[in-house]
Figure (cartoon, helix red, strand yellow):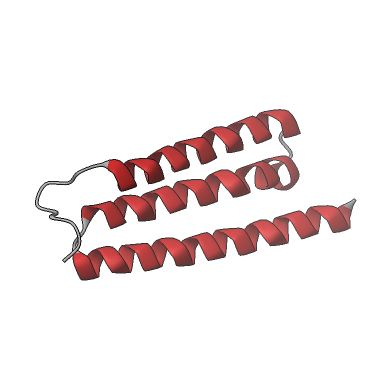
Length: 99
């Protein structure tokens, strides 16, 4: 199964890179517009990215048991989606919405 392990870890690396690019674009949009919600979006994307890659890296890269790795990853992804939902619903001081 070494080929499978390498494939999962390679795909996790791609996932982390793409998640980083998305978070970077969200952060750049925040700097351009100064909308606090976009900063929270960037944080949420980072959390979802880490949570998605966590089970594969923990189980195959580090050697932890698959069940706890999957549980931890699912919990982190859930937290990330809570952060993203907050970014869409929250009202921020000084943010009057679309200009």
